[in-house]
Length: 498
Image (cartoon, rainbow, N blue to C red; front, side, top):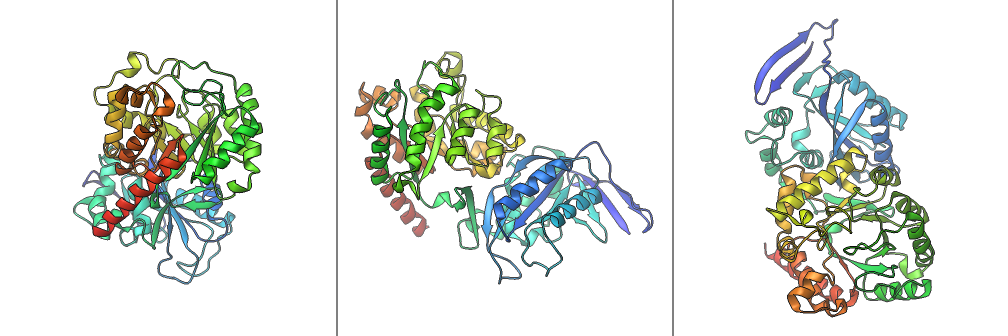
């Protein structure tokens, strides 16, 4: 007997059933599904990437990604640690057709029978299929053991928002074993308190390792190769001067070096991708050869897809885009193909228009920045950039007045909570802030020279870290590293007391 039970929200709509010799498949124009991914054999991340590509080619249109988790094995514990995540997708495939496609992908990627709950290169499970509850000899939906598995529930929750956005999502809540829906069930398992412990770590893949970015605040040192940057234009245009400055920033404690060859200060003139590459590549190649850079990361600050592509091919580890894909229509697809982390920053317009009257209009800056950043994340995910590779930057100093910048620095938790209404995965993304030496600090402190704004920068960085910033982008590395260490120590002490 195969039975399909369909719900709208929490109520039954209809029951479809069939005899053993006559299977009834659910066929509608589109069904929204949730598929869990797991891997603990071979190159786990590459297994995920390959599985996602094969899913897309098989009629499974992925719309949202959960965060990425490294988890201890369950049931059979004598095996390697797993990577786990989940995706939300739309498909025209019926439930058993979908199951067949996923099993084919597993086989093609080398999964064989093996022992139950044992090692596998890829594991693909249907957690939800539309509004249907399905029971058959080979398929049970919702997946029968969702409710007891934190490593499944965590990425599943990431695919939701705190605001229920459709009847289908309401149905998924109603199908849970808890009267408070999936949120209540997740809380009873332990919820966010489980993340960061030995059994489950939320990670970001970068440079062939998994970065548990929430453990400490990272410092990103700025290297401007432009002749007209507001703070240090022209100082590091030569390869020799650039390398010397990078060596200094690394010795002072920088974790990441952010190299930019295009000025994005207000009213800056745009140069071509070719000119940007001419400035960037010689310095990037020289920096990559420095022995000091072996354990460090390099990001390229660009809004051109061609520059991002060439820089990553040379060895850059992240793409930092002040436009979040709005200034080059090819950027998001390019980043998806490069498989590197992507820093998506909030900005309205471009550097020549971002401080215009229209672009400075906000009724609630934190709420609107959150909404606009979520739109950029949504576009990135639809282009194939997983949420687990995205870092968010609220864009301090970009299309913001002084009061807006202050509201953002004190309102980072509000930005996260507003994004969480739409996507818990995006709300969990690392947050980067870049207040360093910005004009609003000079206005507040009466410091017209950018180089005199380092104490104000430290104050801003401190406020941001206490508000949840994970990465701080600064010019003066030494003093900000000290500030970061003190902030992290205080946060650690507070967490111990709690």
